[in-house]
Amino acid sequence: DAKTTQPTSMDCAEGRAANLPCNHSTISGNEYVYWYRQIHSQGPQYIIHGLKNNETNEMASLIITEDRKSSTLILPHATLRDTAVYYCIVTNNAGNMLTFGGGTRLMVKP
Amino acid sequence: KAGVTQTPRYLIKTRGQQVTLSCSPISGHRSVSWYQQTPGQGLQFLFEYFSETQRNKGNFPGRFSGRQFSNSRSEMNVSTLELGDSALYLCASSLILLTSGGHNEQFFGPGTRLTVL
Image (cartoon, rainbow over all chains, first blue to last red; front, side, top):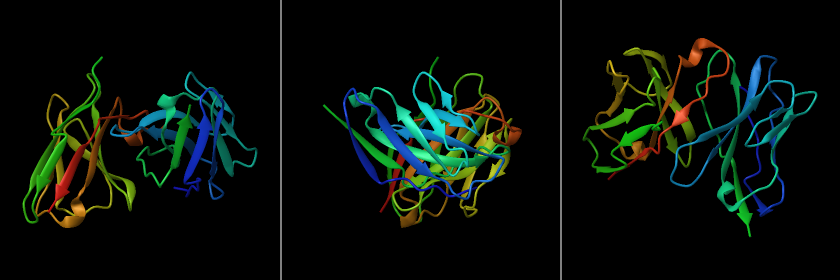
């Protein structure tokens, strides 16, 4: 699976959009981009995934660049409860075994 | 419906001992996967059980083993504990086998934090 690079930490003001970047320059054609988050003392939680097209669900939006070498997770109106570590993962469609790196620690501040 | 549950939540053992962790998946889910999470290595896949059989395995030594029962509940065992086994052990359940292809959302439990002294 391709390696991903994320900033170690980010801050966001409550109510504002949180934009979390991820670089995956070695991604191959059949690999998906997944985002999970882990709130302190809880297990990881699936947020969204995509292949080529931008995706949106009730939690977030995922913007994937045309060359697929990077993506951005957008939380449109961050709340204090969105404070968590966000993981960007690239995984082959044939196998959903997950390997998380360090992720981005998002701190939403009042 | 109830989420994934893991017991115990916290455990302290000494080197050389063995430990058994338990996971109850979401009702109707047949796949149970186990992961190890440490600050240095991040989250790493251990193995997956589906229909009482180990179907996929990560790169961990044979000291790590597991099993699944007919009700899909799963246990993970670590024998001859080492200091480096101290970690958060997470269980995740899903409807279908991880290697079935296509999106397969995994639902994680809260984890068991194991400390080896």
